[in-house]
Image 1: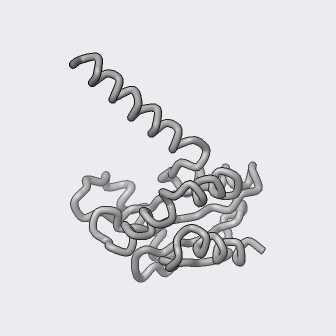
Image 2: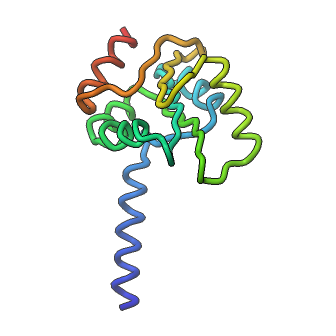
Length: 145
């Protein structure tokens, strides 16, 4: 039984590690901009209510968790999640920073996706896009060009 549990945990860890890769989500927008500048990528700021916002959860499942998006992100994006949870604990500094950034970018609802260039300048804005990763990436590519 212990061996089976160990194998299951190892498989889960391997899967999570593989999913994280280069396309993993950070939480520090300043680090995201610095990385984008050095790699010529765009920064995708995801303003989300991860534990209560239905459209945010839908965007995450339908787009962000899909292999097509993850592959594109690894090559073209620095991903930063700015969460506004209601049930999950969040430290005071993170909460204050996220609220300040929401005010700076005029975020009025969730999900809001702000796209920055490597200089930290806003170059686009998106929300939930119907149609899965292909439709979302098509809108994102319009911003990039």
